[in-house]
Length: 209
Image (cartoon, rainbow, N blue to C red; front, side, top):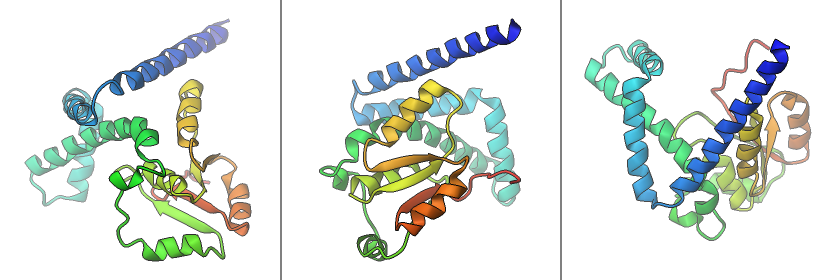
């Protein structure tokens, strides 16, 4: 009986979180991009102030990585990283509207991409898009798909099934397919053998296996 109650409670809380995100998405689309960015900056500053666990972790990692930095500089970078996470969530909600075949030039600059585009256009083998958790890493594969280069992104499915379906649906609105990282090792070689393009995050903790 307790397990059944826990499952029901988890289902309710998961759905409530999903509804909250959809309402938030509807809310932000009522305002301009600039206004939403200002709000996101404010929210990021609040998170830095009240989310003690992540603030301490960020400061400790910066201290270990950059021991010569002053405490003030580490605090500035940690606060900016917290704001960046809020920016990322906001940009995710706008990506499908902004990155389209007809509008992508307003928001994306393809710098030093000649060789990459040549490989995409004259594809003789499979290709791997490799990036890290830096800036808006989500937009790389999606932008390539919107430009007419279909690709498959390896990603971890979200724990909340309602939010997972919503996020995956948004990601797959263009020529992009999301592949669950579990079992990906058996599917990716086949995609590459068929001259497909696969994108994934290089700095993800893959576990002991």
